[in-house]
Structures are given as C-alpha cells and as structure tokens.
Image 1: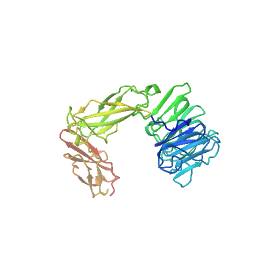
Image 2: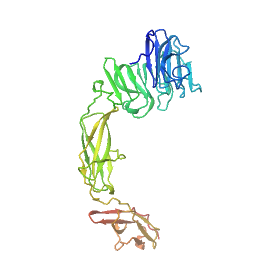
Image 3: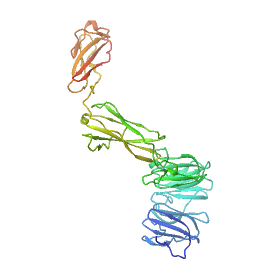
Image 4: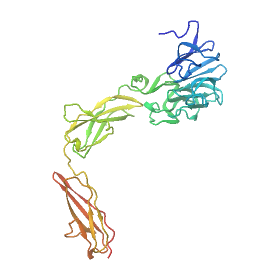
Length: 418
C-alpha cells in the first residue's frame, strides 16, 4: 500500500475514477493524482504519481469522480467540476477538456454523482437532473419523480424515492434494471424492498434495506452477488430433455422442468457424429427449438441451458443426447397447387403443382364443384359445356417410397363462362 500524500495532510473524503483519484482535506483542499490526459487532475500537465492540489479550491466538502471528470461541492453549495467535457457532462461549453468550472445549476444541490461520462444532480427540492452521455438513456435531463438519495454507476443511475424504494434508469445491461431488459430513461422499480441507500457499480448494484439487510442484483461473473444478499447463488437443478421426431425435416424442442421461479433460460444446441465423441457447439442455434436439415442425417444432438434471474446465471445443464437423426418420415415440401388459364368453355386449364420433394410422383384429378370429373387426370384440362356455370378445381397426389402419400387441393375457380 502506498501513502498518497504527506503525513501532515488529514483527509475526510476520497473518490476513485478510471485512472485517477482525488481526496478532500479537513481544510477543504483537493488533492488529485494519476492520469491527467483529460485534465482530470484539475490543471494542465502530464499525469502525476504525486498528489497535486487542484488550484482555486479551498472549501471543498464532498467529491465524486467519473471516468475522466471530477466534481466537488464547496461549503457554499457551489458545484465545481473539471476534466473531460466531450459529452457535455460538465456544461454546454464546446471545450473538450476544462479546468475547474462552476456548474450552472437550476437550484441548490443536495448531492450529486458521476457516471463514466454523465453527471447527475439531486436538488434540495428532491428533483433529479442528469446530463452528459445519454447513449444508454442514463442522462435524459430532468427525471420524473421525487428522490431522497442518489447513486450513479458507469451507465446506470439509481435513487431511492420518498417511499424508500429503489428506482433505476439507464443501461439495462447485466440485469441492472431488474426484470427490465431494455435501456430506459424512465425510473424503474427494482424491488418492493424499502431501502435506506443504494450503490451502483459498472455491472451490478446493491441496496441496504431500512431493516439493515443487503440485497444485490446484476452481473455475477466474479461472484459479486451472493445468496446472503437476497439472490440465490445456487439454482434449483432443472431436468433438461429433448422432444420431437428424430428425422430430417422435423423440429426438436428443448424442454426444461425446474422448480426455480421467475427464471429465464438461454439455450445452446450441440451436434456430434458419434454418441461417445465430443459435441460441437452450434453457435447460431440459441432458441428452444432446432430444425433438422439433410446435413443432420445420422447426427446426434444435445442442448445446454443456463438459468438466470436478474442477471445471475446458473451453471450449465446439458440434456442426454438424442439420435441418430434418420431420413425424412414425411414429405417436407407440400405446396398447394394452383390453376392457370382462362375460365371459359373451350379453353385449357393447367395445374401449377409447385415445388415438391425430389423423387415424388404426382397424380392429378380435376373436379367440377365437389364432383370428380371422370378421366380428367392429366396436368391439363379442357373446359367442356358441362362446366358452364360451375367452379373447377384440381387435386395433386404426391407419392414417394417410404413416406405416406400427401393430397393437396387447389382453390376453386370462378364460375366458368361460355
């Protein structure tokens, strides 16, 4: 551990950005150190391993840092910021990097927070305003609602309202908006739990309830969520199976039986040429179903699923393999035939059978109304006087060795004229 400043300095607050840090002394001075590529240390020059005093500030009270910008609130209530302004997270000036600049705010500020490239102000009127980068709807300007506390993550903002419930908006990545999966600028209720405070990070968030318990939600790839925080680290073990005919042209369906509630599933299908060999992942096959094509003949399939709840993912579960996939057990291409020609006595009508499976044999039967026209079994039919005022249609019977016959009938024509 490295001592950041000389022993004579006494600090009351500290904050950490992406590549820099700042601290407040008891005298209201600000020391900053680290990267200065965006003037986030408050003055020009290169980065510094030695803490540097931010010029012009001697009455700082609180501090917050974004990725490349820094803000403090002075004892007078003035909020002063410096550093990156590329997303207008400090003010509307066209200057990309700014030295310490007092923010022009609409009313007195109660507290504030900084995201990666946005800034949020909670005013004494309990209204909230966020400005800067709004690419994930984290800085929509004025925010609807009345709030008590505020926490700003990299791209998600959370606050407690006057019912002590946590409301969040911005990026929905990793389940940071609970069950909401799309970015939104509208504050969204996360939980019915009454909270005294909330804190948002890059991929997850936590709250402290009014009873003193803690709950967290969002990304859990490094174990940052635990069952003691209100979300299970171990899910109920599901039963995963594959249903459907094992034949080319059919559809296999992954079925999951689980006692876990309020859970979503992700799917990944895998295929192999042998039951005992490794299964190759079909990266494009991520739905609960998979359609079997001729390239799947003789192959075996398994499906892998994961359960997730508010961004907390379970371990993977894999079904037993099924297969081998056999040849088609039915005709796969069975189009409805159409009839071309002029509906007038003496004219010739022709069947347009459509595209059927290869190797099929087609037979035709013409109809006058509901009655079979005897002997009319060719691909064409010449309209006779008996057809006058009647409607004509045709059926197509398709046959192929090893599969059942299929009969498809065209729509009826308009009435035949003379």
